[in-house]
Image (cartoon, rainbow, N blue to C red):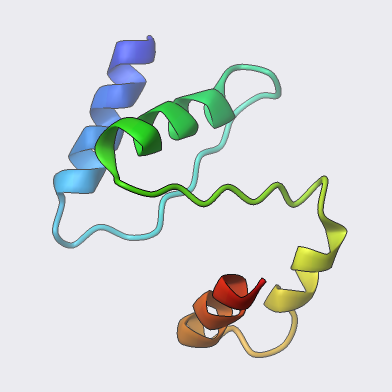
Length: 77
C-alpha cells in the first residue's frame, strides 16, 4: 500500500498540469509520514506546518486568498 501511495505522489509530481496536493484519509494511517518521506526524497527543501499545533497560522487564510500573498506571509512567518 505504501509503495502504491508513493507512486501516486510521484505521478502527481511529474504532471506538469498538477494542482495543489490534498491528502484525505482516516486518522493515524500515515498521511503525514508519507508526505514527509516523499518531500525529503524528492525535493531539496521541505516546509512543514501543523495547523493543529499552531493556531496562529489559520489567520493567514482568512479574507484575501491570493496565493502570492499567502506564500509571502508564510515566508515571513
